Amino acid sequence: MTPMIAVKDLSKTFVLHLQGSTRLPVFDAVSFEVAAGECLALVGPSGAGKSTLLRSLYGNYRPDGGSLAVRHEGGAVDLMTAEPRTVLTLRRRTIGHVSQFLRVIPRVATLDVVAEPAIALGEAPESARARAAALLERLNIAPGMHGLAPATFSGGEQQRVNVARGFLVDYPVLLLDEPTASLDTANRDVVVDLILEARARGAAVVGIFHDAAVRDRVADRCFDLSAFRTAA
Amino acid sequence: MSAPLLQVEALGHRFGRIVACRDIAFAMHAGEVLGIVGESGSGKTTLLNCLAGRLAPTCGRVLYDMRVKGSTDLYALSEPERRLLMRTDLGFVTQNPRDALRMGISAGGNVGERLMVNGARHYGAIRDSAADWLGRVELDPGRMDDRPGTYSGGMQQRLQIAKTLVVKPRLVFMDEPTGGLDVSVQARLLDLLRGLVRELGLSAVIVTHDLAVARLLADRLMVMRAGEVVEQGLTDQVLDDPHHPYTQLLVSSVLQP
Ligand SMILES: Nc1ncnc2c1ncn2[C@@H]1O[C@H](COP(=O)(O)OP(=O)(O)OP(=O)(O)O)[C@@H](O)[C@H]1O
Ligand SMILES: Nc1ncnc2c1ncn2[C@@H]1O[C@H](COP(=O)(O)OP(=O)(O)OP(=O)(O)O)[C@@H](O)[C@H]1O
Ligand SMILES: [Mg+2]
Ligand SMILES: [Mg+2]
Image (cartoon, rainbow over all chains, first blue to last red; front, side, top):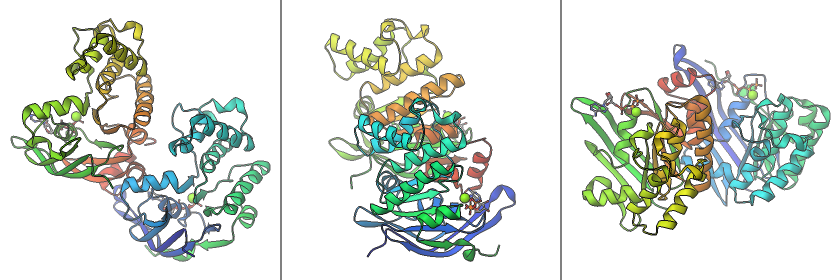
C-alpha cells in the first residue's frame, strides 16, 4: 500500500545569523513512512527536533535536504519543492495540524476559530458552527465561552480549542504536537478518543505525546529522533 | 492549472542614480494575497507602483492576465488601454486616504463616482451600490452625503477601501493600509480587511512594515532589502523559519510576529 507520508533523508540545520552564524544541526538522514490508519509517535529528549520535524511535515519549517512526500488527492506532493499555493491547498484539504500552542487570531470568537477550516472547505457556516459547538462541548468548553475570543482562556482551554480546530475536518493526515500536554485526565481521555476515532476512519497520524500512557494508547510505533542528531 | 494573474520578470526601477528595486521576479495566482515587508527605503512602494501600472519600470516586464487578451505586458499597452484596465481591474489603496479621495464631494459621491467612470448611469442603482459598500466597510450609510473631510482618519481609510472595491477589481494593491492610524483603529480596519479578503476571495499585494499585519492577511511574503527580494515563501515559513540574516533581524525585533 502506498504510504500517506513518506519522509526520506530529511535534514535540518538552523543557522542563527544574529548569533555569529551559529549552526544548530537538528537532525540528519531521517526516513520513515506512515500508512493510513497508523499513528507514529515521535520521541526523544527535549530539543531533539520533534516539533521541528512535525512543523516540516506541515510545510511550516523548511528542511535543507531530503524529501517529504504527502499523498494528496491521488498523487504525492513533495512539500520541499511544492509551490506555496499547493502547500496551502494541502493544509486546507489534506493535512490537519494541532500545534503545541494555539496561535490566537485577535478578536475572533472561539466558535469561528474552530469552524473556520470547515467553512474554508466549503461547508455551510451554520452547519460548520453547529459541529464546532458540539465538538467544543465534547471537550468541555461550555457554550458560554464559544462567543469569546480565546486570547484570555487558560492554557488548557486554549489547547482544547486548538484540538477542536484540528479535528473538525476529517483530514487524511493529522499532525499533533503535545495535544494533551496541559489537560486533566477527563479531557485527556476525550482527546485520546478523538485520535483513535481519526485512526479508525483511516487518518495517518504523526504525533508528539509527552505522556507515555497516552502514547501507548494511541500510537502503534515510535520513532526516536535522538538517533539522528548530527554533531555540530 | 490556470495562468498566473500577475507575472513579474526581471523588474527593476531606478530614479536617476538611485536603484529603487531590481531583479524582481515572481508569479501570483488569482485568490492569492502577497505581503511585502522590508525596511524603509527598500523599494516597496516603487515596486508596488510598477506592479499597479502607475510607474513604468526601467527594466523588466509586468504581465497581467487580461480578461480577453490573456497575458499582456502592462507597459506595452497604449496609455488609454492601461488607464481603462486600471479603472476596471486594478485597485489601489494608498497609506494616506486623502491622496485618493476627492475631498470636495460627498462620501457617497466618492464611491459612486467610480461606478460612473466605468459606465454606470442609473442614479438610484449607483446610490444603492454606494450605500451598500459604505455599510460593508462599517460606515453609516446615513452619512453618505457628508464630505470625507468630516470623517476621522480611520473612517477615511475605510471610505477609500469602499471606493476601491466597489468596481470589483480583480487585483488590489495596498500600500501600508493600516499605517498612520491609532492602534485600536488599525485593529478594526485589519478585521475588516481580513473579512473582505476572505469573503471576496480577493487577490492582493499588500505592503506593510507590520509583521503581524502580514501574518494575518498574507498567504505569501516577500522580504525586501536595499531594492532586492532577499527571501520569499509562505508567510508562516518566512516568519517562523527565516533563513536570511535580514529576515532573522526583522523577526527578532518584534515581540510576537
Ligand atoms: N525557528 C527556530 N529557529 C531556530 N532554532 C530553532 C527553531 N525552532 C527550533 N529550533 C531549535 O531546534 C532544536 C529542536 O527544537 P524542537 O522544538 O524541534 O525540539 P523538541 O524535540 O520539540 O523539544 P521539546 O520536547 O522541548 O518540545 C532546538 O535546539 C531549538 O532551539
Ligand atoms: N520619486 C522619487 N524620486 C527619487 N527617488 C525616489 C523617488 N521615490 C523613491 N525614491 C527612492 O527610491 C528608494 C525606494 O523608495 P520607496 O519609496 O520605494 O521605499 P519604501 O520601501 O516604500 O520605503 P518606506 O517603507 O519608507 O515607504 C529610496 O531610496 C527613495 O529615496
Ligand atoms: Mg516540541
Ligand atoms: Mg513606501
